Amino acid sequence: MKYLDPKADLTFKKIFGNHPNRLRNLLNALQSLNEDELIQQEQYLPTTEELKISGFTDAELRAYDKFWDSVRVEKTLQYDSYQQGMEKGMEKGMNQRCLEIARNLLSLGLPVTQITQATGLTEEEIRQMKL
Image (cartoon, one colour):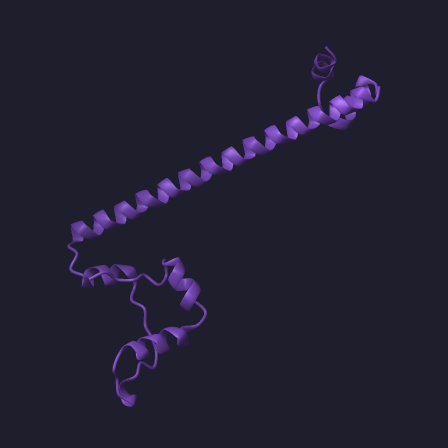
């Protein structure tokens, strides 16, 4: 049997997170219960207890924890890599924009010193554009 972890499942949180009555009403609607048998309140078991109930041995439980630890590490590395890529892309885009502005200012005849102040580019970079 597969257990739902309401603390970790994003869809569960979106649907029921701030609305415990929704979950209670759904569970009551799905079961054929008498009025006196209806669920009045819900209680969440910690994830570890759910796994023990499911019949996992201690070794299986450790392997399960190790697996999810590795998944979290992998997701963190992916996110970090994504962030680095975004930063590099933004930096490259900003540099391209500075070069465009410098070309426009050169075409207007502004002195190199003023262009370096306006764009942050070096005088050497601007002189190379003149060539």
